[in-house]
Length: 222
Image (cartoon, rainbow, N blue to C red; front, top):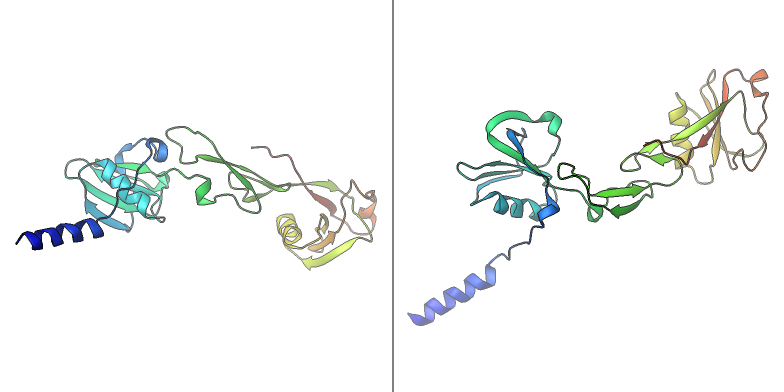
């Protein structure tokens, strides 16, 4: 009998899941009296909100969890969007903080972990390349000079519907540094140089009404 007990204890130790240490600043403060709707990744009963947080950090897809103190209901959620939260006095929402390990920066942005508000899910800051802005470098940022263009340095051409689409085309095209956009034709001419490297032609509007020289802006407003 003692041998069976020893074998059983050995198997329990072998297959026991090691607890994950949840850092105090890994989650936001709770949003009390609300719950996130939608299909849960997982639902279980836990002894406390700490154990629910432990379950959430095990799943990369888990961005937040709904927790009911009364019976320990733990609902792991794939979203942390508080704008969709529904009033529910029995629950509270705790959101997982996003850090550089989650690789949030897009389009070549450099990530830097930073302390943030206890209510903010962003625990990072993205240092964006010229022409990109926004929390995750997800926004194109460019300026323009009306009735101006650059000649003879073409790096590509495409019909587009907006200046935004023209600069997206430039961003995705190797060697593009700026663009000439002709509003009346929906034409986007890419340049291999910028207005700092080659002088702008300031009377382009005489030949192509509605032309604008577009360039990536390195200074973000936010």
